[in-house]
Image (cartoon, rainbow, N blue to C red; front, side, top):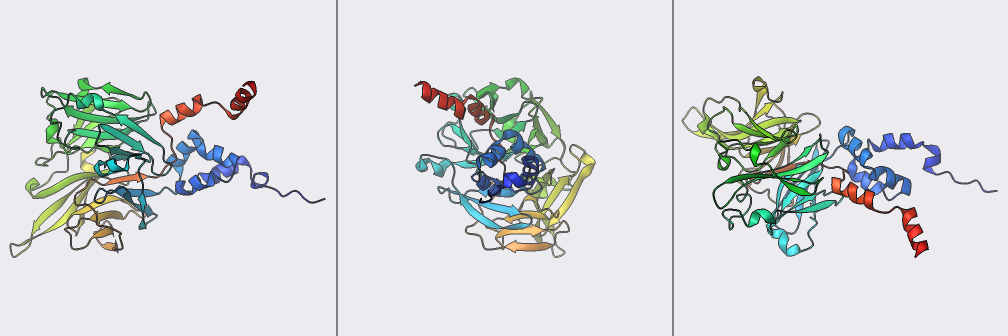
Length: 396
């Protein structure tokens, strides 16, 4: 008699396969779902996706950006210091004529927030294709400056995750026709908008802040449009407590010499960077980039300065070695992706890019994940099982 060929499940126990998969990059797991029903079930499990996102040492980060507002986005993938893998990713828009007016607004746990030109937002996972469309038409009829395009139509916006409620949140601050400020929040778990006007500071001055918010430690952070003083320079909204607070920027000898300031997330730490102007001995001047990293969150004394000898440098993230990966704008002598160490030494300059980086566009860095949205889990729970579908067909 012929010996029955053993499958991999006969050789490796289920728990061991689970442990191995936790060490496999998410991009490979998507393809492995097609191997067998068991693997599909394991990889599709929301609990496994959460464990993989939190503990996988093989996480892949990507920088997603638009070029000339075409019908696709370019994504620069960073795999363990290798930042040369670049490809097009196509957003989930059925009407391709609308893509030209979409913008990338932020990211959270593998999802990217996009804005459309018809009063709606899209939350989208580029790896799995999971997405949800969020309408804010209730704001459109009441909003001031209807003809102004995003991001100016929202004074503040941000995308984050409330771990206490296991909920993804989109927050928007806007101004109505009577010049009253409003602060609204969309909950993906309840699939509804929540009014948070009571959380707004009494002296809001929302127009004084850069609209794009940075997610860190369960809170969204905004920087002033013009950084003139270091005191109370960063506005924070806590997604769990639904409250605002402020922290100070690093003390500077001359704030007037700081240009194009912005926030970034480097190695899990809040970072403030700007184009710095410094003078030479012959009264001429040059530019470099100052990057201040807050090593301990909300501890002012932990601000640490790094100087990058490149003007218009925009840091994206840290490599596994702690080096700073970023891009330079089209007005720099060198264009492309750069890797510097913390001493400011240039380690690598990747020139072979298919396109130019947009000048001063808000960079969006996300980590690939298999995580489902809360609405995806609800839909799956409400969907009949295979046995139930079979029983229904028999009865009919």
